[in-house]
Length: 439
Length: 190
Image (cartoon, rainbow over all chains, first blue to last red; front, side, top):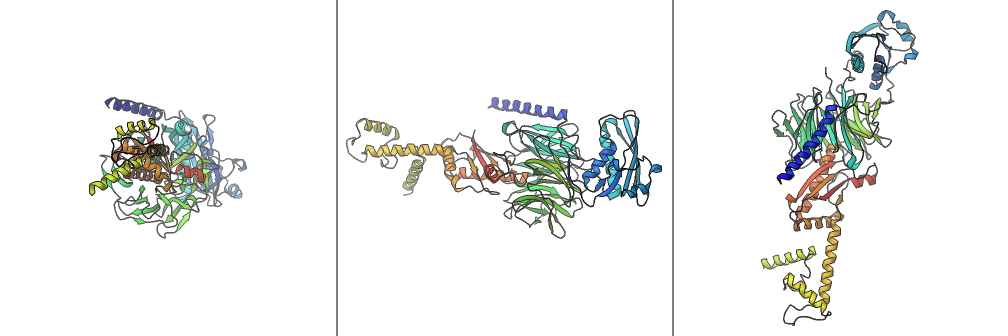
């Protein structure tokens, strides 16, 4: 008996040793490939003029303006002008001839200069409203030469916010799970990348399933479910250090972690008392408060936009439906009625809508319900849709689906318009989670 | 009265397990072991009547052989039933299907007869719907099988359940047939 136990312990530490190795390396990995599938008709024309460069920058890297163009295109809300169609390539206000840009049908012009000093590169950039002939933005920003991509995303965020009034999300991160191989040779990898799928890093690799990654509000940690011990357990993983803690490993289910707005507690689904119920775990002392008590399945909890109430999935009416508790433990109110399968709620930051997986005519879409009117709208046209996750500014929605027999992550605007997809270069990809805006 | 009815029940149970031969036709007389050697003696003597025919002990050899065959057949049936270790479910349900019951009863009896035997029940769902709900659904299916086994004689302590939700499909693909094969509980002796 003692022998067996110590063998198990050794086996376990070997396994966690392997896991740690991968985490420490934070390995670069075959990336998701961005594919823009559709642009909105209402997309705003903008000219992002290639930035003037003084000093040499590393070859092979995308230029800042190229990154900004790609970001704005990806949002679906902008239609950047082909640089080859530009009549001039200004890099500061004195060189901008508004009449030329009006002729080209442009609403906005972004110009700038890059200056290398030592290991850093500084960008000075200005954004103009063509019709008003007015400067909307004039800033400098700098980054290490090795991190031009972050500089580009930063400028995209500023431009996006100056025009739309809503913070950009181009500097935020995605977490997702890829799977390669089959059966016993399956490899599950928890990865973190830029929102365009670039710069992906493996954070955890395992031969057993990983699911439900959830970002802490400060963007520094991920909670997720890992089957590495042979059953589902919840881990909290600090991204920078790779340090991780198993926070829930009770008999039965340990699943669906979701952070509180203050980052101090996790909502989770446990079946330690015999049936899937929702609990709140205080992370400081691991104390649990049970929030539901019903014979049905209660799972997929998430705080609402106000941080006071909770959405969750329950099949207490016979099939899975979305419910809302005004405060933890309050009597739940059913939110969805449109079909017999509605699950995995995700509130939008404004509090107007809740998004979820919705079955209709034997297909699974992402739908949303207007919380004031109760009106339900199906957002996606794909048919095997799962895991909706909203961008922190509420403008984009990422979800997992099937495309031509392989799995992809797809991004649509939150009202269902423009889209891009992120197919994995190898294997399957699922469980996307959009990270918070961090400043 | 009470005691008799208990004996009858016990007898019926033993018979139905197919492991005790000839319980009914012997009128409940012989000890199992001596009875076994009697049967051999009967066979050797060429199959006519046996044993100074005093009381209820006299039995015809043909009847016994039938009983034995019956017992063997039942045992073989039970073994064959225990060969069935995957049990399927309809979409979004954890209801044990009629056709799964005989095999599950056979597993329950086997567990009852082998109290040290451990079994692991792995619950699964098809890929449709959400992964967390499917995790709970897989658990509900595994629990349904566990309850069925316990009701039929297994002890709760022999059974471990785990749900993989939609994470470990038996069959890849997005067809009705793949989904049907993936909505399952797998029973694994440990």
